[in-house]
Image 1: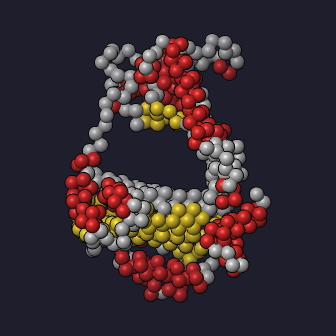
Image 2: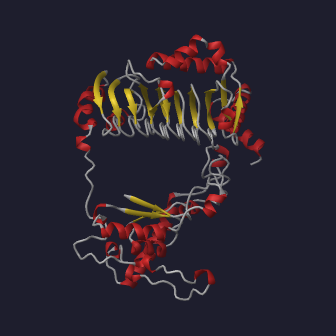
Image 3: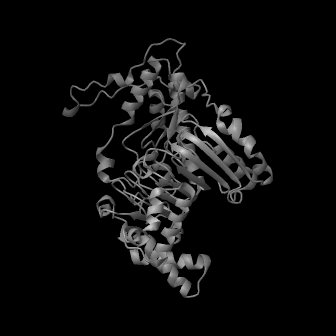
Length: 479
């Protein structure tokens, strides 16, 4: 699938300058993409999707005539659910209760699924009416029929003089053998994946009976989403609770492809001796990932990248220990994973909402942008971290006694599982290293924790204490 995303759409967390002045109309990208695929007889193998402020059946019809067969809607359905476009999606302060975890604000949410269903029915009805007017019996007949579109002829604005946009409506004449829409299903080769050919058989006793299993296997960079199908079977058999920790322990040697250990549940431990591509541990859901270089490696792990970009993206629970540096966007949208790594690229812990991250090394720029929950501890040996951190939503603090115990405990586990030289040195010189750590603490999150302590001191417990804490925080924040 190819997605053409127009400049009109985008998240409400985007800066206004980006929303107003970045990108191009989807009509331009869609027309060029469709025409190029048809001219090269590739259109039959690819689904083309388009998005960017699609609102009406007319928008869908125009997009279809220009070559799209799938359509993305985001802003309009959100509006039907009560979104008033305050553009604070990233700040946990959405007054309509749509983009927030604050129970006080969430109580204001008035949307229902039926509202979106009703809206989409109206869009579909308008598309059917337009198809009838144009003489199309099926939707596929309409895809790529740009000859049924006409440009406006009444444009007299001086800025438009001399512009020739006729190529947007160009329709390649390739004959009836060349398809204008996707007609061939893609073979993903799942039956040839390492999960299907080896791991499921190895892990069957654990999946069926909860018995402990372990194995050591080679892995290469063509092996993608290793462990995910096994994780799916574990969840099917045992539910969201998964299995007891360490029930399945799989060790791999080599260079793993994208999304190694993605979405693996509790009870699965995946140990990789080598390196990993992008999306390591994406959506980690309770499992454990251990990554370190092969014994005898000439490279210093703490000075070299061992995991690609976007590791632990959207992870919800579990643990990860990475002896080496991870690429950009480490732990973005992490909501519950505890991780140790020895350096990260730009945008680390962006939009993080929970969990604990210990970084035994340097970070790239824009660290903690949009971070509203969880805690990060960064080893700042050279006193430069404050320039790399985005402090719009977080404060930089020194470690207290409780923090010392948390950080040291995680580093000890890291050293035990990965043999990390940097972790070992830090533990041997703990007093010196401990003073060099910086605690990255989201301001709203800190206020909620403090309010929660006060609520618990007043005798409240469970959900009552949590609701009281959020209500106090909302009052302090002025919403």
